[in-house]
Image (cartoon, rainbow, N blue to C red; front, side, top):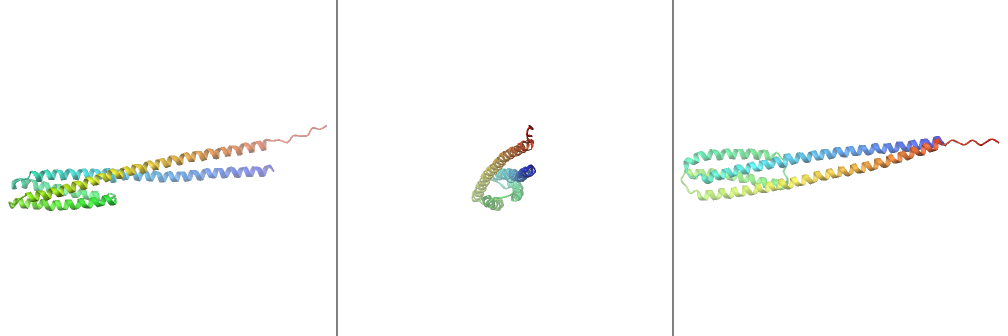
Length: 222
């Protein structure tokens, strides 16, 4: 029966078209998730790594300038000029620390960051003791040794924090490349499935045309 055969072919074509629709819907959903993940990765690279690296650089610069001021401060008149500058650098460093704390920290990064904050607090106390000793005419050698020790520890912690930014940035880059590769693979798979389904639909169309195009031959009358 031709009408039954036609209905079966229409149902098959409808199922194939439905499969294409479902495939496209799933692909678009996955693409949307990939775009969101890529956006999150790029945002993290900028906000949590590049910006943080600038914080580390600025704090390191302020620390170095403080050390130069302490090393060159040798008398009370000079201390009257140097001490307010040291205080200003400390305020700036504390402001940068507050900005740093608003970023996303890894467990390892948080460890070195807490150590660095302790270094800054101890440095501020040692600097205050240094200027007090100077005004009182005491021996500054021991004070300078303690300050240099804390400065070196703070610099080392900043180096560790900087290394973490590089490592995390590399990991985010690899994650982004994996997302792009997965999306490309899905696209190729989607194209392959659509081509296969398209060929199946063409086969159905040609078969239907062949069957319904046949006309019964009339028997010759003698």
